[in-house]
Amino acid sequence: MLNSYRDILTISGAWKFSLAGLIARFPMSIVGISQILMISTLYGSYTLAGQVSATNIVSYAVFAPVLARLVDRYGQARIMIPAVTISSVALIGVIVSALLQAPVALLYIFTAIAGAASGSLGSMVRSRWTNAVETPAQLHTAFSMESTIDEFVYMVGPIIATVLTTGVHPMGGLALAIMLALSGGYWLLSQKQTEPPTVDTSEHQPKGSVMTQPVMIALAIVYIGAGAMFGAIDISVVAFTEALGQKPMAGVLLGIFAAGSMLAGLLYGARTWRFPLWKLFVGGVFALAVGATLSAFSRTIIGVGIILFVTGFSISPTMINVNAMVQRAVPSRRLTEGLTWMSTAMNVGTSMGSAIAGQMVDKSGFKGGFSVVISFAWAMFAVTLISIPVLRETSRKRRAHLPLELRSRRLGLGRIWKRRPDKKFDDEGDSTKK
Image 1 (cartoon, one colour):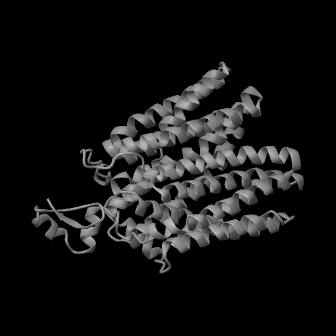
Image 2 (cartoon, helix red, strand yellow):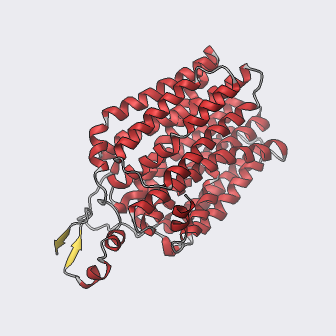
Image 3 (cartoon, helix red, strand yellow):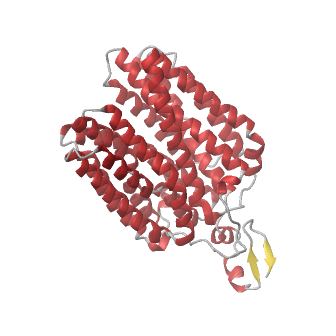
C-alpha cells in the first residue's frame, strides 16, 4: 500500500506542496469552533457565536468560487498571497473586537471578510497534483491522499482548538488558525515550480461558469446533501451522548467516524479500481446512506461507534470519486474553480444541516436530529440515481482533461509534440491543424 504513496511523493516538489497544503488547511477546521467558543465565552451568547460562525461560512461559500476563477486566470500566488493576508488580518480583527467587547457589528464585518478571502487551498493543492503526476493511477492516489488529509484536519483541528480556547485563552484557537494560515499558505504559494499554469484568456476560450454543466450541478447537489448529513450527524451525536449522560463521548464518536474515513481513503487510494467511476460513486453514496440510517437506530455508545466507524469507510472514497469526476468534467485550466464549487457546496450543506438538526433536536431530542440525517442521506442517494446518465457519460472521459504534459508523457509523445509546432492539441486530447 505504501508503495503507491511513496511513488507520488517522490515526484519533484510534491511532498513540499502537499505538506504546505496540510498546514494551510488546518484553519478550515479551527476557525468555526474557535469563534463559537471564544464569542460564547466573552459575550455569553451561543446564539451570537453561532451567527458569527455562520456568517464566515456563508461568506466563504459566496466568494470561494470567485477567487478560484481568478486563481485559474492569474495564478495561485498572485491572487492568494494577498487573499491569505487579508483573511488573517480580518481574523485578528475578530479577536481584537471580541477581547474589547466591541459592538457585534464588527464581529460580523471582520468574520465576513475573513471568510470571503480564505479561498479553497485544498482545491489548489489538488490542481498542483494534476499537473505533477504522470498517470491517472497516480492522480487517483494523490486525490485519495488529499482526501485523507482533509479527514485528518477535520478530526484533529477541532480538538486542538477546543483545548487552546478553553484551557489556555479564549483567543488561543483563532491565534493558532492565523499562524497556520500564514505559514502554510505562504509556503504553499511560494512554490512556483509546481504552480499550475494560468488560463489562456484568448477570445477562443469558453466563457461562463463550469456550473452550467449538468454533471457539475448534480455533484454539487449531492455534496450539499452530504454536507447537510454530516452537519446533522454532529448535532445528533452530541444530543445522543448528552441524553445518555455521557456528553464527552460525542468527540470520541465523531473521531471514530473520521478515523474510519481516513483509513478507507488510504486503502482506496492504494490501488486502481477496475469498476467504472460512476458505479463506484453510486455504490459509495448508497453505502453512506445505509450506514447513516443504521446509526440512528442504535441506542448504545458502543453500537453507534461501530456503525459510525463502518459508515466512515464510504466517506473518503465517495469524496475521492467526486474529485475524480470533476477532474474529468471540467477543462484542466479551470480545475481549481470546479473543485472549489464542490467545497462550497459541502460548506453550504453543513451549515444547513446543522441549523435544521439543531431545531429538530430542540423539539424531539436526538431522534429528531437523526431523522434529519436519514432524510438528507436518502435525498442525496435519490439525486445520485437521477444523475446516473450524466455520471456515466462523464466517467467515460478517461483522458479528456488531463494536462497536455501528462497526456504526452503517457503516450511517449513529449519529444514529438515539441518537434511538431504545426500541431496543437485541443482540450479533448485530439490534434488539429493550426
